[in-house]
View 1: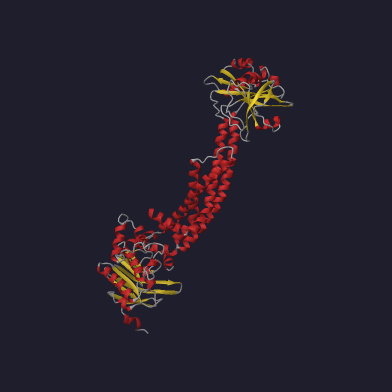
View 2: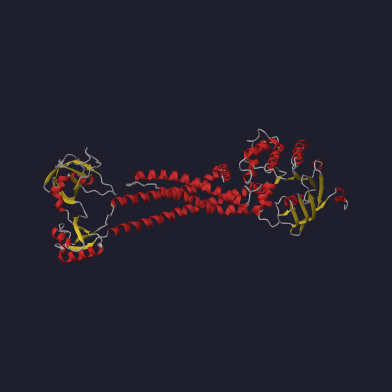
Length: 385
Length: 225
């Protein structure tokens, strides 16, 4: 086996240019597979992180959807909570909100508009301004988006200017940019200010019902919806339903499957073309080395030895191509990462897949030429000069 | 060593060999002479188990390999036979060492002592210091020495040589024939095809082929002319 590997390396090294051109197809194919899989994996990771983990064991969530846009305060009330808790099998109920944002009217001189607002995150990269967060005691400080700064201050410098939010005066201490893939509200205020002035706006439109152990949460959910439809305080202002977080991940999985099919198609076509190149070069190699095959057979090589020799060469050629392809794939991923809003990641799975695929290409497309070499009549081979 | 009885071979209508009977004893040095196209090479292809498509009977060490599988035939060739060809048939991109090593790659017996075996035969044929050279860097005589070293590296009982001095001048031919004589004295059976009478004189016995027929005495070859 080691002897055959050495012969393979020697033979490949003898025709470097020809073999490099043959490998090029595999290099490109594998580099694309690595890059596309890395983008897919990175996207999945980002999405999964964004969706959070749906720890829904032992609880069921019912949601309220308002039918009127004007009335933003409707949802679940404390009376509704008591009403659901009175159902059998329910342990306790917690209210939550599907959106954590509030909306506010902002004004600078004569310009005013209504926009989204939230409490500042722990760390924010500012486009202009020095801080990274707004502390609780900075009650008059706000960060605003670059877009809002442009609209409100007409392109002028907004930093350290005063603006009015819902009738209160705030000072702009920082401006941040919003990317397409990373949603942010237009205004951030301190946690304290948010709690005092805006938290009341956020509708409690989700009721998370924690069921008692051993109780079927689906049936509890259905009964809770029925109860709300009958007795809910805001029943006339919207509809209740059992929310199903699985639906979202199902849609996402479906989308990822389409991406995978597409990757398989692209990679399949490029590797098919590369494989035909490998087959072609192996045919040439076999016909160039008829004398060598004859000598080896005369000195004890079986036809299986000859077949495996050329198969090994074909596989070595493809695996070298695959390894170079992986390195190029890494390079490609690094370039892509400079432009993507999320990070593409190369997984061990995609590396293993690449090596397996290149080995398979070598085996499949090397088989027919190797077989031809193995089955050539010996007397004819020894007449070759 | 070997015995053939009534062996024939034809390509379509053309009869290359007819009713050949020949026996070669252990340790014998046999020369086969004959003009070009007489069937010499066809005969040694059959004797060397390189060609199985013939009629009649061929026993090597009292065994017939007519129905033997291709893979087993390869093993027998590798372990029991050694070939020396007229145009050396060396692998041009490989070194002297690598050329001589070829039969050992496929032999089940010599895997642990490869280096010693190769170095031993290099010494025997007088190629010391040439291990790393390519065939193109060697003279014709040296190339044939490499071919002989390759043929004997597996210590075969029988060496089949097809015109081993055909491409060499008389001085170099003598050197090569001295090697064959030494090998024969050490117990190796040698069957050599040649058209050179001087070379044939190194053999213990000479047989003649003409128009596919084998003659045991030179007089018989020409008596019908």
